[in-house]
Length: 243
Image (cartoon, rainbow, N blue to C red; front, side, top):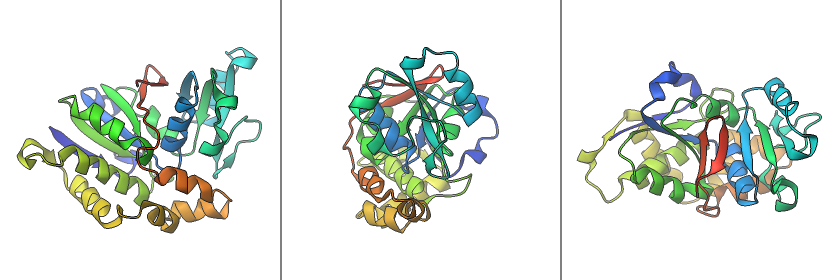
């Protein structure tokens, strides 16, 4: 099994190259965490879009009471949208049974780039074991795709990606796996920062940005390993919980 790690979506030069791969999309702050929360609380499906315009256009095809427009730009809720990107907003009362049309700055863009993947799953610290267990049940080559921030490296996504790779290969002969240099770097980052994920998030560039906006509680939620045992799978343009 080949395992690779991309630190930003810009590294995907040909989306068709993902056809035979399992792609794990990571956006710790906050898309992965928010998507898992929404599905846990009963959202029917989540439709990620690469732009605000696409989200609004898609919403125009649906019954008014059936959907919620969700997402952010600059960390804040988009004007005219129902929900922003804080997992705390995605309560059962608000999202149960709804179609969520989701446009975030980084995560939804990365997810839509994986539309040709054999499997595309969304991972954060909150559901990491569900993701690892799913991947262990397959023999496909794996690409861990970090969403980053505006196509720049994010420490939190790299650490999560490294943790995924570490758990996939833990206790097994490394000879079974062909690990890229970026995967080995991610594993080293995880070993350096993994003992205190909340501290890492608070000290990260994106974490500091969210704290300034008043979203410090989101960091705590995002740091809680295996708190949301949900496996979000992106297929045919929608995200559903496989289990």
